[in-house]
Length: 229
Image (tube, rainbow, N blue to C red; front, side, top):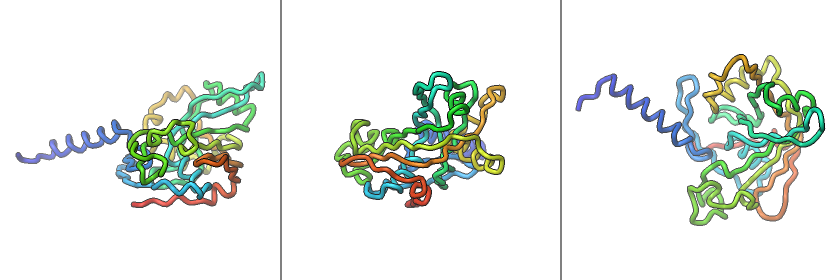
């Protein structure tokens, strides 16, 4: 059968659609389109002893979490799900960006009380027994079939101040968010979405048995996530 330009175009569109339907399976091979270039990068799970690197890896391998704030009027705790990104798939920066609207009560709370925490879980991704020795024969399931509360299913709460992104960092924030969450680019302008960044001061990480590890903001930002591409 002859291969025409139209057929090639259709096949390319089908492959791109399948990559989105599959969701990229965070942490294995995630394919996103950035400036017309497909990125195909693997970031292996670091050893659990490397706590700062684990925190950075977890931020990059997840795409959403629970933002915990203080109510602007009552001071009571209020949490909600939001999306994040620390860079394009191939460029983890550790800088936690968000794209939120003042119509959301979480944003209203943050503008009144910038201090907050942001919690993420490895349960989002699908791993292998090579990634996590606690997985056993349940590779391919979220967190290898472990319960989300199992200590071997890594989770982290990042503490700090959530602030509007500075003018000089707006382009970086936009590329980071829209490359990982492309539908955000079409969200309504009249909702006044803005880019925010969590200035991480401390990380509470649990990634294995034996208790929580406390990581300073300095150690978190100094750590590096290595890819296996």
